[in-house]
Amino acid sequence: MTDLPLPLLASLLFALIGPIALIPLFATLAGAMSPAEQRRVALRAFLMALVTFAIAIFAGASMLAKAGTSAASLMMAAGLILCLTAIRALFSAGSGGAAGPSPAPGSGIALALTPIAIPGIVTPVGVAVIVIFVSYFPSLTDRLAILAVVLAILLADLLAMLFAARLMRAIGPAPLIVLGAVFGVLQAAMGIEMIVSGLGRSGLFG
Image 1 (tube, rainbow, N blue to C red):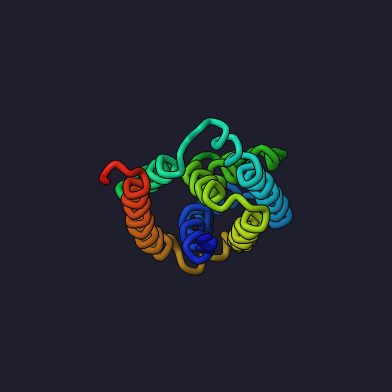
Image 2: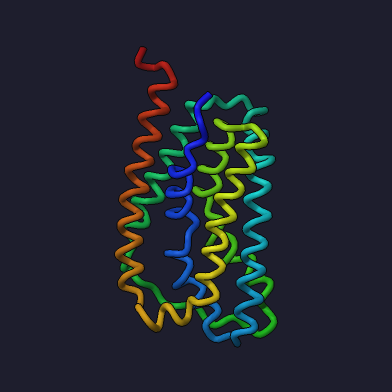
């Protein structure tokens, strides 16, 4: 049996659901709130994301298995999603856009759910990658290991949200844009690898 490739999973998920894109998003949306309100929003977003990913880990793959999807097709689909998401992010980086209005007082719960938790942290491609890994490694031990990786990245996200305003003041957006581009290229390359692996497993080429 193939061992669960935790380093590959961690690098993929860090690029997809990690703090690089979350820092400017949180600083923009919650920057006008008090520190206490920011902490509440960050904690709620963290918990909502954790629950959503736990559902994907323990229920999503089982639903796909009942649908009769093959592992090869799932791998190719995830690879295609990775590539398209990376290409869109790379070409839209730096295009800018007007910042939205500051959230109204008392909107912390709604703000934590969307757009911070979903889709800020819980991205569709992140869920897709997790479901693919669970489909290949469905044992309870492997699922718990995948959940542990997700939890570690979500804790990094939580810390990033708590210090987002300070980080943006200290370093500005430029380093985050560069890091985002690097991880975007890495994500596209990993997506191509998944498509090639899926084609090899499909038996279409002998």
